Length: 381
Image (cartoon, rainbow, N blue to C red):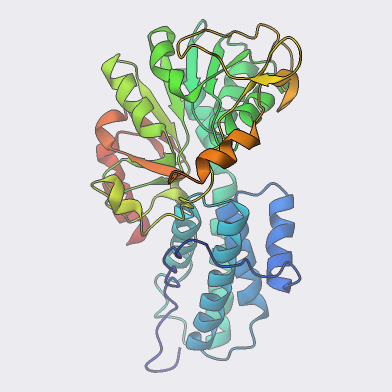
């Protein structure tokens, strides 16, 4: 390494833009094309980003560490902009944390490599090792987490998490009989998507209203959640509504477990919900569209009573088709009228403090929330 040069540092992550968000990079961009190809292979978004950055490192024409750093900063900004737009405002904490951990892992202890080309190749080799380890993380978590699922349990889920799906699938493969309750996951219907995946492997699923978590909590044995990010306090950032579900679970003395990969561990220390505003990419202006149900005549209608009950015994009995059977429908006319008179806010994520979390299932092992800060120090040192 030439005198005065230093190893690349993680590119600084751009702050969330004002509403409306900036336009995504063109899909004709070769960098975005590579990223999209990685995503089509069902690679987790943060790892797809790291693989794309490895491609940038491998093909960079830079002849100095600073030059590579500039290339990576430009590529990282493009990827974050694109990922934010495609995920419609969900938190990019995991994406940014994954990229930063990649750089930390790839560029540590380099003083004994004087040649630039050899140093760059060392970074690439370490980066590939980082990706290989990260791709195994969900399998490790599934193997650890399924031991907490027992016969006869009712498990509450919120949001769509591939890690949680992996844990439950592994439990089912080990001949454990249990049922899952999952919230519908408005506004994007993530609960229906997760339910479809679970029913495919033979797990009985009941989809409930987001607002009905408290009503059903007394029937639940454990709450099992994923995370968009795990913060220094041992708390998590996850789909909106997670915090209130955690509070209700605490009230009912129900264990709440979080399954999350270690590349989602982020150097953030929020104390309140407001502390997230500069670190997640919420689109607060998205319209809130109330779900409607079809009556027997096939037309959409609202209940005349605020406490009337509606059960759909046929829904999700054997399979889940999003929007089938009148389970998800919208009446746009009335919404347009109301929207002109009110202000709506629709954040995508919230912060759940560590006090509501029992344990975290990670590829580093089963952790208490208090142990997360120690693991973060090890990861980022």
